Image (cartoon, rainbow, N blue to C red; front, top):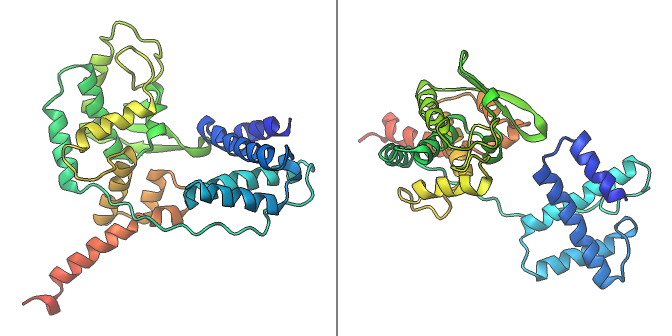
Length: 297
């Protein structure tokens, strides 16, 4: 089937992660279910823009956010582009579609004080495998700005101790190298001592494990971050992504080059990194207001 071939195309040619490919296919399946219910089983490949618009209306009525709807339509459009690429479709019914308006959300990072308090809290608890692991997880996020899935996928061989560099496999299997701070290497050493003392290690290649010796998973990583930061921050969302945002914002606040931050984050375009300049500009305005001679009393 063409959907199966599309899945292979996303995996093998576009180098998308399993999670991303699954999301694309789920979106296509959702549209097919809609066609089955409303249009008695019309195929996606023969659907017209009117039918797609009806699906969008149905999604809106179901309370689905514009952001999520845009993602679903983007998946559908990618599928149609693929069909055109393999000559199974002449015209893309979404060629003139305009995405729904989405309100831009400004992600507020953790303050440097919140980061310090969380790290102090973790330092007080390091006594066994899990506390040593959790400490390294938090420090690695803040010291490198990596994504949650990137942390989960780190293997022991990705760490070059001689150069103190970490190899990270980012989106579309793009590799990048990030320097490791001395303090981070120290935490790594402590964690590895505890890791080596686990009774059973099944996923030996991976750096971060559960206490049962299995590769760590994304929800556990989220719980680790939320456990500590919910104690020091009033933010409703205490996630790895907020630390990633904090990493970028704090670097920019200290005068780091935007292009350098882009490379560290693994962004493909500078526009993606510029999102993080919002808070650094706010910080700059505050410094300006406090320091400019015309404002001094």
